[in-house]
Amino acid sequence: STSVALWYQERKQERISKQFEARPIELRSDEIIDGVTGLIGNTPLVRINSLSDALGVEVLGKAEFLNPGGSVKDRVALRMIDDAERQGLLHPHTSSRIFEGTVGSTGISIATVAKARGYEATIIMPDDVAQEKVQALLALGAEVERVRPASIVDKKQFVNLARERAKAFGLEDQASANLHIPRGHLLPTASSSVIVATAVTDALGEETVMDPKQAEELRLKPRGFFADQFENRSNYEAHFDGTGPEIWRQTNGDVDAFVSGAGTGGTIAGTGQFLKSMNEDVLVVLADPEGSGLYNKVKHGVMFDRREAEGTKRRHQVDTVVEGIGINRLTKNFELALPIIGDAFRVTDAEAVSMSRYVVLHDGLFLGSSSACNLVACAKLAKKMGWKDGQRIVTILCDPGSRHYSKFWNDDYLRNAGIPIDPHIVEDMLEQ
Ligand code: PMP
Figure 1 (cartoon, rainbow, N blue to C red):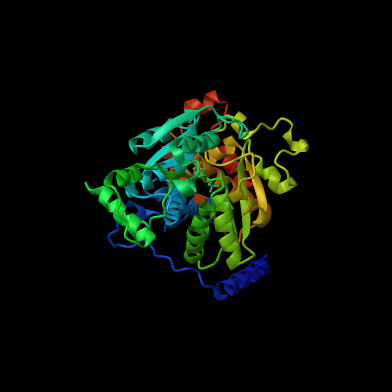
Figure 2 (figure 1 turned 135 degrees about the vertical axis):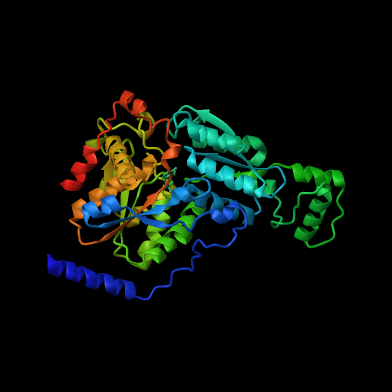
């Protein structure tokens, strides 16, 4: 085994010295940050000492819970909104509104960036997600609508309803509903109608004398977009341009595996694709919670394989405590991940709960449910591969435990749901 370890170290050295050109990343500094959106991304990578020491591999977590909106989704919200501005779909200080269907984190991130840029947000979410997410959304001034969890073929499913609400707002024909005025031309002033006229002049490249009433109508015309994180490619790009290069830089390209759950699939697709583009030997691994069809899709090519489907409930039928990951349809973002996923692990609620209690007690790391799920998959991967020579597994610590007091971090709730809180589950997993 010494020679294997030696061979391994040499390979690592080779890989690190291989020429690479990661995009330059600004690390967090002592400079004054220009507004809240400047706090998004560039998160640190933390070694999870308890798991790393027990497994003999380095388990490194990207501390996404440090983003100002409290989760990895800040990156996606910022990129979707930036891209929408570039397309002329949003203009500050007009009646611009962003619509989204989300289990919560993306909504909070959208509401955060919206407020920083002068927009409104309407968030549609299932009514069984943790209450504290709704409270955060309301505090951020978002309009919130909660609906019963339903299948994607149901019109009242939260994503479908968000699309409907955007249409009802007058955004059915986004191209014509939005004048393509470059960003920055509309300023908040009492005489905004005059400024609209100027902006129209600029956009058309000719003198336009506009009736102030007409200009005011134009200003009040509904603008905005349905963010559609599941299908929106900006989601993938946020991770391909941000999360992936940051991890590459922070590890000097020394990464053996990247482990992530998938909700929209944006994180695993964008980060995974970037890491693979730098080194095709990086193993990209899916962590999949109970009730999700993605594990089957990766392993058997279909979401609900007959062999496994019996007795397996769909995501919206399961009262799982793991929020934000797991889904039963193939989204555009997850499609981009499918060709590069090398392995997948199922993670039970009991395992995720046990892991969250393990790392809080050993590391003082207070994590949300999807982060815990990711860490379980890291441990399973290390065991399955027989890794114990310092190989590096990077994963995402998506959000903090404080987003989950009412379910995942509520012992009474878990007892009622029949989910054991048993630290031995993880101890056994590490010892095996
Ligand atoms: N963790 C949490 C807490 C989330 O809200 C989400 C997104 N829904 C994810 C993980 C999954 O990320 P992605 O959508 O990029 O697959």
